[in-house]
Figure: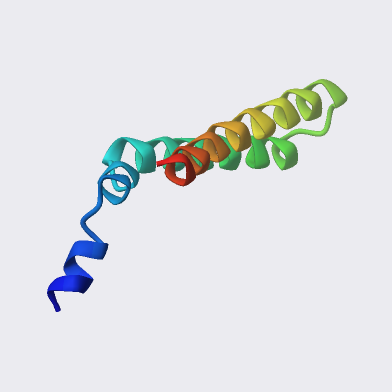
Amino acid sequence: MENNELKHNTESMKAANQPGIYKLIIFGVVVCMVGTYLRFAHDSWQMSLVSWIILFVGAIIAIKGVFKILDA
């Protein structure tokens, strides 16, 4: 049992489990949800363009959080 506890108590696991990383991912997902909502809320090409930009920014934020976990 002690060997299993040591395997999950490494520095990389502690770094990967920081709450800030998961808050970043949740923020990115919320931004993506706003972008998705705006895609269907209005029917103009300007709003569609803005919603796509918001959607991609949110995706980049969420992916940045995932890469922080993988880098840890």
